Length: 140
Image (cartoon, rainbow, N blue to C red; front, side):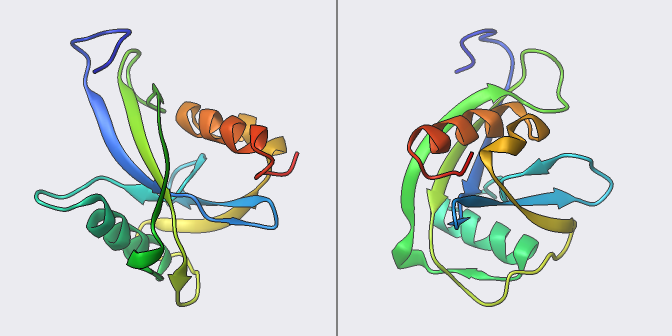
């Protein structure tokens, strides 16, 4: 439920947190100026694992290894680019993958971000960046 406005919708999303050398993998969609943690929304009847696997395959051309999926946490904040009060709830997982990371479908580019770039991402990603940085998982 959206605590700040109980009648406003909450956008339910899944995200894949992949960290390498204390940098987190980010993606930018075509015609957008903001990078985000890769992932997306469930389709009807999909589990978290099924939805996240599908989204990452569509966006980054790799296959998530289902047995390696680990819940990182769930984070909620104002949804980037949405009217005030509309929030996004992001359930984040880490996982290994198979294949070669490369942008696909609507993804224009990928990048590796450190905490120094926290102001360049949307509100929920900022919360996640702070959480990762506080745990010494993301470089300053």
